[in-house]
Length: 337
Image (cartoon, rainbow, N blue to C red):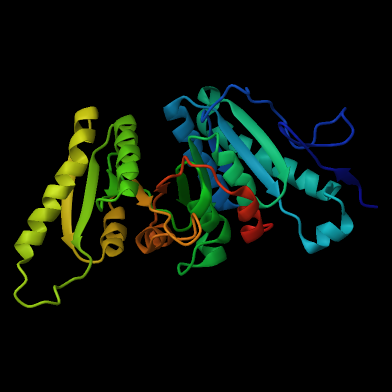
C-alpha cells in the first residue's frame, strides 16, 4: 500500500492538507530576512555532501544561516503512483533522510560553532525551485559529479542555475575529482573588461579578504595564441591589456587594502589559462554575461569550460543576476529538471 501526501503551496513552502503536520518545511526562517542565507541544493550524493561542507564554511565565515533544500522532482512513475501534486511515503522518507544526512555533515564539521540550519523539502522541478530560492540568498551552492555527466558537459541543474539564478552560484567538485591545495592558495578571478567581470571582481576581493589570502587576477589580452596579422605590434595590445586590468582592479584594491593582488596577463585562450591557474588556487570566481535571444540563454564558453574542468569550487556571478526572472518561462524550458 502506498501512502500519499497532498502537497499544497503555502507562503513557506508545501504542506500536507492536514494542517496538523507540516511536510515540506521543518524550520521557519524570518520573513524579514533579505539575501540572508547560503542556500544548498542537496540530494544525498558525495558531491552534495562536499557542497554542504563548503557552504557551511562559507556561512560561518559570513555569519549567516544555511538553508538546505531537497527537491522531490516528479517522475512518470511517481506521478502515476501519486497524482494531483502528491508525493509518496517513500519519497517523503527519503527526503527526510537526505536532509538529516546534510545536517549531520554540518554538525560534524562545525560542532557548536555551526551556523543556524534551516531545511526545506519541495515537490517541484529542481531548477525552478533553486532559482526561486536564489531571490533571497547571498549564494546558491551545488555539487558537481563528473561521474554523472563527465568532463564534456554541465549537468542540467548546474546549467539551469548558471543561466537563471539571481545571486552568485558556487559549483563544488565531487570528492573524487576535487583538489585540496594549500590553505594560503589564492582566489583566482578572470577579468575581461565586461560588467560581468566587474561583479566577479567584487565577489573575488570579498572572498580573498574574508579568507586572508591573496587574489590572482588573470586577463587574456588576446584570445588566440598567436596574432594572425603579420606586423601587428603585440606590445601595444599587451600594454592596453595591462592598463585595462589596472583600471578594473584599482577601485577594489582601495576598498580592500588588506588583499594582496597578483596580476597575470596572458596571450592565449582564456579558459585554458584559468583552468591551468586553478590548479594552484583554492577558489575561482568568474562572471557570466547572460547574453542571448532570451534572457539567460547564453552562457559564456569560458565560464562553461572552467566550471566543467576546474577541480576547485567555482563561483559564477551572472551579469544582471539581481533582476527578476521569468519563472513561468523557466518552468516551461527546464520542466521538472
